[in-house]
Structures are given as C-alpha cells and as structure tokens.
Image (cartoon, rainbow, N blue to C red):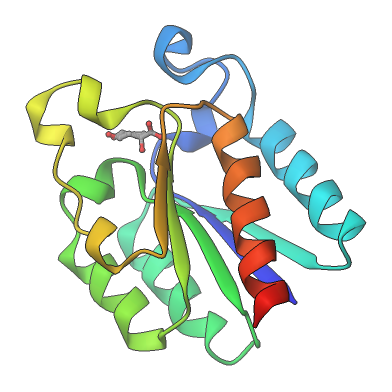
Length: 146
Ligand code: DQA
C-alpha cells in the first residue's frame, strides 16, 4: 500500500527548532526512518512538508488520484486553526492518523483543541520523533487487516 506523511509548518526546522520541546532529530531523519520501515513491510512511503496551508490542501486533493491508502499527518500549528485542512481530509475520505511530537495537552491551553482529532483513526502525541514510527506501525496493521 502507499502511505503519505504530511508535515505542517515549521517542521522543516526540526532538529534546530526548540530542541527541548521537539528533540534533535531532523525531518530528513524521520522521513528516512519511515521510508525504511515501510519498505521493510512491503509498503511505499511518500513524504511532504509545507509551510503553506494551500499546498498541504492540494497535496491531500492529489492523494485521491494517486491511490494513497493512508495518511499520517502532523498539521503542526494548523492543528489548532485549520478548518480548511480538516475539510480536505474529510473530502478525500482517506483514513489518517494525527501525530504530534510534543504532548500538546501538557502545553499552552490553545494547543489542547485540534480540528483533526475527532476525524482521525487515532492520535499520537508526546513521544517525539518515535511517534511517527508508532503511527506508521498502526497504519500498516490497519492496512494489513483490511
Ligand atoms: C506540534 C504541536 C503544535 O502545537 C505546534 O504548533 C507544532 C508542532 C507537535 O508536533 O508537537 O508546530 O504539532
């Protein structure tokens, strides 16, 4: 199956951005690990990061015609603001898992609300870069069940 990983704004700075909160692993490290894990299990992984809401929306629209079976998404700050990104995921009807590096519930109150969680297959937060691997494992076991 094909799995798409989407990274939202500022995640291109991972590794140098607030390392006490987000860790020292870079986005390239994360994507490489995920691609290897997917390949090991006979799946194919695509990854994309953007700081622009419309680019993420258009990437989700395109996923519809590319046979993408599952999405892993860290919407980053758009988690707390973007009805448009939520609507895009609902429109394409591709199952998705919401991932956050930090535990958003242990931070500022404005990070507690997500526009995605009620539509997600599941939510993983607080496990740093490893959370993406947990998400991929969950996605692969869902795909193998179906
Ligand atoms: C984040 C949490 C968000 O609140 C924040 O805006 C981010 C990253 C995380 O992965 O912990 O940019 O999604």
